[in-house]
Image (cartoon, rainbow, N blue to C red):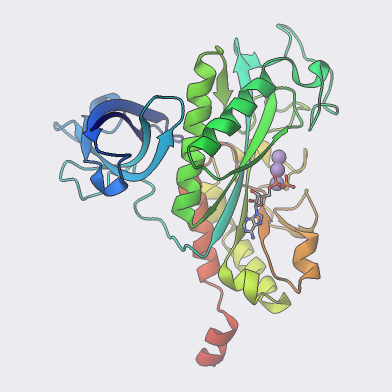
Length: 346
Ligand code: ADP
Ligand code: MN
Ligand code: MN
Ligand code: MN
């Protein structure tokens, strides 16, 4: 038997953006535990904005498990928060009720700022560094400083070792701003991995005295880019059948549901989706081929391939909840009849 360090990780009840929380229990297993072997656990909900009435115990239900490469015999356990009965999802549990489909693929591009001493990493104590331009995908001390790349490389290695589908990194447009991409098949799988990658990044940067700022417009109404979490998505039908008619019906459904999407695409998005800095205004839906100023960017490959493939919704922001974002995308897609269904209805 081996003693494993199980880190149970969950989302607390803070609004509009939950915080990641985690605590460790040590348990013996013959080998690396499976999800089914991991017991329910509890925590004090009165300290996390999750207490209900006088009973402050909430239940942690393991839903995904990954090896923890930063700890000897470590296990990362993603959990849902349940009521004391262990079966009713807590009001803060956004994962329990979302739509899922393992043939729906999601690629999230998580942008964020490194923050040190209350300002973006590399910003002088007063004023601003040289304007945006050389930072995006930049190389060299003047562009990215001397710590950021070390951190993003370490984070990449941690994610890969944990079995997270990390697909890439780039330095972003603002100084101190970076991005990583996570791809997953199914909304829960992709979103669990974004939360776990966020967790690993936050835990990693503790030792550097650096914080992660996920707010979508931390520098306000200035000439510094905000942070998004573009949601690239495709269903089996989009990849295999597609077609111009279906695409146009899909875009019409996205336009109709604009407010439902914006509602779950992260707080303060009106400050980011202004029409400037490679964004579309939040209150006007648009799409365009290779257009980074549109709500939805249609890749060249999509058109070339007879309107088949994936689309990029550029509106979700860096503080968005990937569970709710993916679910809303699936909800809108579900409103659009497929070719066969339309004939059946006619
Ligand atoms: P850009 O910065 O040009 O918008 P990125 O390379 O950062 O693009 O991100 C593209 C994302 O699209 C990746 O996360 C990738 O996993 C995702 N992606 C690629 N193909 C598909 C697909 N068929 N379905 C869903 N997501 C996809
Ligand atoms: Mn990107
Ligand atoms: Mn980006
Ligand atoms: Mn993008």
